[in-house]
Length: 493
Image 1: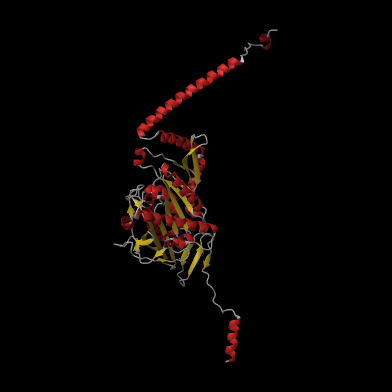
Image 2 (image 1 turned 60 degrees about the vertical axis):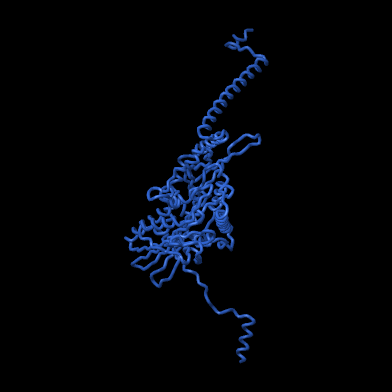
């Protein structure tokens, strides 16, 4: 029987098992040859890159793995969802009772890129997310990259400017303090992060142009809002104090010749009140130029020293306190609020910063106060009856802000270099815990003093109802056995 004719076509002869094995061996040999050529070409390219950038082969390979991981994460993000998220980012700092947390990644410095020993291990993603890429070793001793992704209220990449940060993060807090439905409320913004991560650049900036930081921009906007509200019959006055906490001592940065030996006492304020320090200067803020001069004086007086990690390392926490008082001419109503802008000193590891002697003492004081700040947030999140505000001068001064019904924004600055990946992870884990802390329930309170009778009320902005301060009724002391016996003796006499 003709099998080819029956099947209607040609018939392929069957190969023996030996022939099949020979073909498989040839295919594998060709695959190994091509792979070896690719590895050789890749190695040559890595060596060229290593020689051009003064990097080791391991650093070059790690940077390539990070680049591939970064591309994968960016592809997984939907552009449409990120656009929708950005539209709501401007209200994140005031919309929820919890602490709003935003992160900012600084770019690698020129000296770091030219040195060639640093790899950018941080990626800012849309929708308020940020990823840290860490080198890991698998069981088979192969190298890999492990990415940890964190999600916050908003995130800013290395291309973000100080203007972007102000508009999306701090502008709602400024409006909260002086205008809108929550006039007279208190707001706090503080920058947190390790040393050299860009906190002072975010808060103060540089120069008078686009590089201005949050503090000069906020003061300018407050003055502009006050001028607009003057057309509605309001008269606003602003006063500012600028203090630093150096080695657990409060120092006035605006007083000429002030030193660390002066003793300033933190005045206890009620919840929702404004932080106050006795004996410090309160200067009127009447113009943008006057405010800029005030900020320059304070920056020049701040304690700054050089370490191995930062040529201008801040050795103290600084607090810019802007007290805002508004008065409606017709009704006599007073609105009191304050805007607190805090530039925290960076946490540091002395093994990397090379701190010794006085620098070591400063680093210990800085880390202790930052640890106390973390204890306060954790205690608030657990709902403890006792909050350890007095464990440090920093938390004691910020007690009215953290324990009241105002709004708080935590700005986390991240260092993108590979040696700082572990410290960046610590900062982000702490920020994730703080992001869940609720400071006040029921919305920000307006500190209002009525013009009739000068009686102070607190108004809940979320419900619009005025809640008078509760006062304990003083009545007769309840009778006891001792008081009854005393009454009987008195009646006999």
